Amino acid sequence: MYRPKTLEDALEFLSKNAPEVKPLAGGTELLVLIRDKKIPTPKYLLDLSPLKQQLSYVRIEDGKVKVGAATTLYELSRTFLHGDVRFAGFADVWKKFGTLAIRFSATIGGNLAAATQYSDYITLLLAYDARVKAVSVRGERTIPLEKFVLDKRVVDLQPDELIKEVEFAIPPQGSSSSFVKFDRRELLIAGIVTGAFFLTLDEERISDVKIAFDMVKDKRAPARAREVENFLIGKTFSQDLIEKATEEVLPMYMERITDWWTTAEYRLDMSKIALRRGLFKCKTRIEKGVV
Image (cartoon, rainbow, N blue to C red):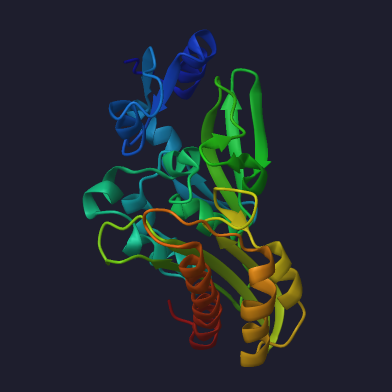
């Protein structure tokens, strides 16, 4: 275990020891993977807890919301992201994410690095068109989250890089988001189907819409449902429009799987329900102005 004094110290250690080192933040995912031998046991763990002051923050800067990678879900819940209707989906995720103990430990950076269909904050942040900032001794680069997540447990992050922060543009007035998660129980759920939805209305016209699911087609990780977005953009929000998007457009681009949990057919039906429910929840929040 290596405990760096500064971010620069951490990056130097990564540079010298990659790929035999794994960054450790909350550990709610990484330690389980090591314990269950799902990944090779690394030679070193890089303890990021000494960097909390540098990597834990939620702030507005240059017209963007910036969230430090070491920010825990609990810390996130104490910010404006849980009070402003434009960010309402963050409160939805919080209510459905693991247990309270996990929320105190799990970090945004860890959720992004995990990159599975159960990475709820990836799904939500995709609906905000977020970007990931990665840093190393070679410098830093910013990657669209949609390109950062390549597939299940595969991200565009070099062995000597750390996730520093995630950022997204401040939504305009007349916007809101929602997050829908289905499982057989209400507590400690992984999620049979999850979906995140962002909507901006100009009176009744859909001026912006972003839709993400835990998986769509040709990818076993969260991704945008861009074809559905393209169908909806610019049109007048109505029951008939959402029904057509749900029953005709979504099934053409949604490929679900059957496993021990449930069937592909059931997952597709629940995806349709999530789309309807999520978009109408966004509309209601915009009209009422409350989360």
